[in-house]
Length: 183
Image (cartoon, rainbow, N blue to C red; front, side, top):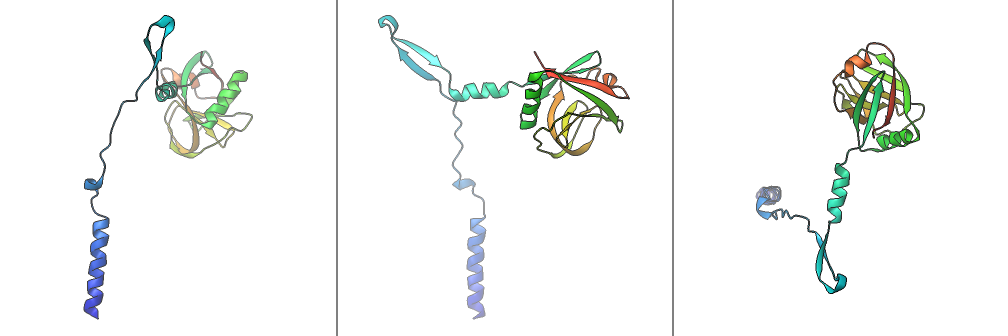
């Protein structure tokens, strides 16, 4: 009886090991193909001529590569920020389409400025380690801009492209910051 149980365990172990083993030989190699363009035959004035129209996938990838930008004005200094591709950034853009968003921001802990937005945006918080130039949403209704680093749960809104003069513009006290759509 012990021998029969041992044989069954050995048999089950063998099939378990082979089922979990290396599957490289069973994998189908990836085929990487270039998207094809669509050709349409046209006959203007009786002549045949091929007209090339771009593939829809190419058009959508070009649109995705275009980054939305906004201006961030602190005093006399203006910076450009690249916006994230999320619902909170989209809602902020909608606000800016109605006019510039002006926020009185207070210094907090020597590494960030925080100010009330006046309304809530859709939040998708995740644990984030920020860096200078990051712009985030805190608690759904406050904008935080960083000139230092912090780790907390935020929704990313954007990031300043060129930090030259950023820390100096923010200074050590309260500031008024104006967010507007880039031209």
